[in-house]
Length: 446
Ligand SMILES: [Zn+2]
Image (cartoon, rainbow, N blue to C red; front, top):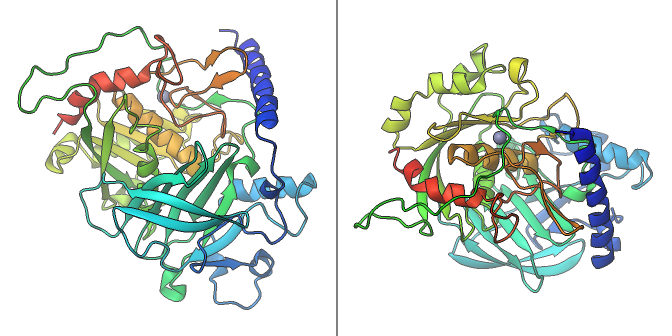
């Protein structure tokens, strides 16, 4: 494969695509880092902190030492200051906290918000992928009146709210940066809010996944999964797959489940496993009981999957009645799989690992919420038999790097979507069909 040539081709197409997008969606002045205009608030339920006070560590009740702003976000903010795109004393992100952001957890809610100072209404429906009533609820919906908007938010009972709000030309991430240790003193843990468009993105794609295939989807036939019967599921029926979500001591915090659930919620959303031609519901069960052992094992940074399977053997997965197991890893992998940000053993196996932190080998995988979610959807995809595929392009201006591409381009060029002839693909780019064909057998592990 002539990688360089292909890369140049792809970058040229991306450039054309960007120009086209700019013509269609003129960049709003509001998306710049306007002075003192908050990126996102829920009116009456949001406190916005002055970053100058925070960085100068002046007197306040905030525990500054436990601020956990991701390095990639700080680096992106510094780059904007250095280039003069934002003022030296401003940041690309807001630091905010919430007071009871979604008090009524009804099946359908409307949530008044502001985006860059303008009022909007979110129309949200509770996602019912959980079996547990833990006060952590995920909602999916749209911004009223804005075409192609998409919102996924997860709220817990400790004033944490995380997820994203997107519409053409914008993708706002809301991310909890403090574990709820801090909530014991403030009652309201800190969050950061930023636009993915302000983040540093990879200047070149690199290998993303440690799974060593690189093939296009072969043409497929629809598979009749089971003969007719009371339990039979057709390929277009919803199939529930139980997923054990585990972590180590490095990623663990007392609010890690809320964060993990926001990633699973995005995976279950209508653009990914929730698509009409995929229809898989990932039902999470969270477990951190082996976090100390995982972190203490010397193989954790070199062979995360093997180490995971050691502490969570198949007998444990069977006992817990889960089909798959994904490990949200708090370490940058080293050794043989150094370049990988995720691994899986593929179809007919039940384990996956996704890296939750920045890869220091380059600014390619920045370890923020978007890239973490990409990695989780991708690696679980392998467990359903989804394969790596080439970038899908058609006409001149359309480039789609679907979630099963083995190279990560960052936002907005790496989508969280599978390939399908109905949206991003053709007969040879059709991971939606592979998952559809295999989902029932995956759901029958337990
Ligand atoms: Zn892969």
